[in-house]
Image 1 (tube, rainbow, N blue to C red):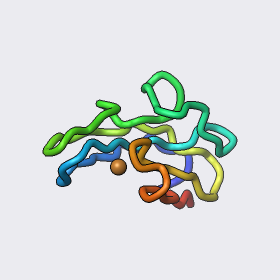
Image 2 (cartoon, helix red, strand yellow; image 1 turned 30 degrees about the vertical axis):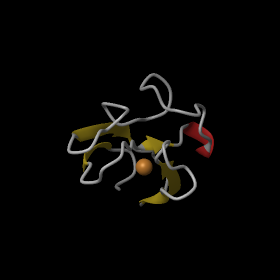
Image 3 (cartoon, rainbow, N blue to C red; image 1 turned 90 degrees about the vertical axis):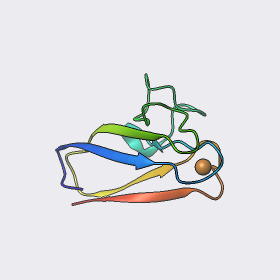
Image 4 (cartoon, rainbow, N blue to C red; image 1 turned 135 degrees about the vertical axis):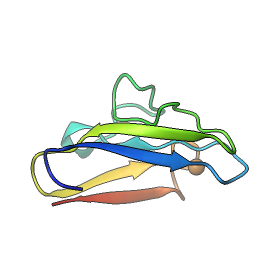
Length: 85
Ligand SMILES: [Cu+2]
């Protein structure tokens, strides 16, 4: 992702169970156990059911680095890092 931009991430749940996308907030920490859309950047809707689509509107940090994200339903298995450059 380009630093300092506003990103719109589009997601579709092709699986059978609910998922979401929860991006770590400022400082790299998750400030919520389950994102609500009022704290950390979160998919809208914050529960993406099977077959549903969602978007994440995200203000990308202005400095290069990596930002963690996860699915709150599967926080051990479904994690990743978004590269900012
Ligand atoms: Cu999941």
